Figure 1 (cartoon, helix red, strand yellow):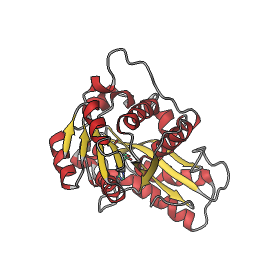
Figure 2 (tube, rainbow, N blue to C red):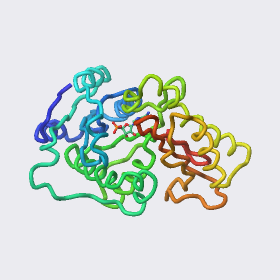
Figure 3 (cartoon, rainbow, N blue to C red):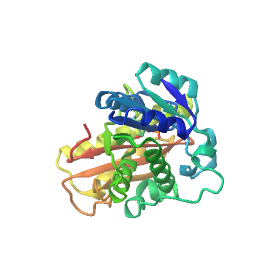
Length: 283
Ligand code: AMP
């Protein structure tokens, strides 16, 4: 496995054998089984696998969140080596954003709701860095997690609108045995907060059970989730959404497919989770 900070090294490896297919897994590091599920899928579907590790400062809307974000490059590289990854790009900030940098990618409507509404500038940061990653690696396929459902929708939109020459593959959410969606941020939970973090999955499960029993009303599904969160003293709801899975517009009245999603503060840690109802799950 070759680890580098430079764009030149990535390009040289990528094009050493132009006939080979490449899978790219973009990450911010502090890897867990969720990331590794993307790596394994990429490994199975491509001749070569590249992983980027970059804590992207411009997608953080809160400085404290950026500063607190965990970083473990050596451990990450050991995990990736064991998965048979070929190339890791772990650039410095000035490589991604050299002095004088002034070009940003903005996706419009689908970024205005949910995470985009709660975190101003977040998706502009995500699409800008992912566009750069796509240009540096020029992968055949790029792998993203359903964990960040809106991010996946935004990147699909960007890739389609700007005709990036690659396939976007979205992989299912990987959870801890107790149901908590894996996230690098889970490490920031204090021991007493860890059980409270299960409230996100409980809220999704309660609304999913109502859906199974025939509930199709968007507002009633949102209310079920809000009530479960409100019952957990250590949790503070940011938003609970029942939205159209493609446009992400809130369901007003009844629908036959829904993306249930939420953001919840558990202590100081902001966690997100989601589930798709009545629509094709990612494979
Ligand atoms: P991050 O390092 O948080 O930026 O995540 C990198 C990629 O891994 C993103 O495409 C995430 O959606 C994906 N990912 C993170 N956590 C999970 C998870 N629990 N299950 C599946 N994919 C995940």
